Length: 194
Image (cartoon, rainbow, N blue to C red; front, side):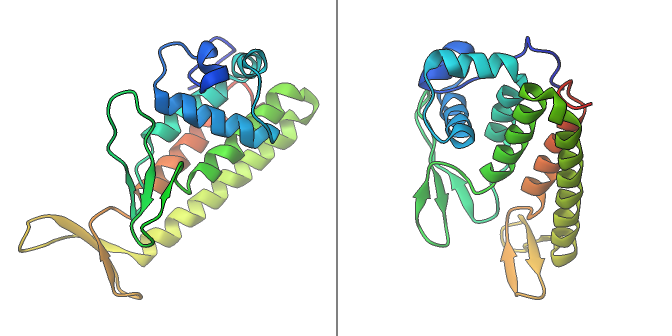
């Protein structure tokens, strides 16, 4: 849970000072979130102010870095201290973030609104509640579409199967959404939301 204004995490470059002890990945993600929220790269002092005022953003950064990869996506192996990249196995393309970052961007936006504009905190809380409900629906849809885990007789590994598409995968297709839903539910309990 995120409480008050004393907890913080990481942001790259500018926000690095606001998030001591954070990893390079956390700095990079924080920078992406802040740049996405403000439409530009922020000066260090501004990034620090935001991360101190909106501790939920630092917590969301930490959560994003722990999010299980979506099926078909892989986090690149990097040397300690490097910022990972994410590979879409279907296209072979590499990206700086997984598609699920959009969820963290939305939650960061609602947290920022609730903290910086107290008169809009109730509306932000209602929007977050609606967002949680939409994640519940997304999870239920995924759970209904996939069967498993099944055991592969050759490898003894577990796999999941989607009967309507005929696709089988090794990764649990609901782990990513389930994790993000848990984050959103915990965020509702932060001090930012009435």
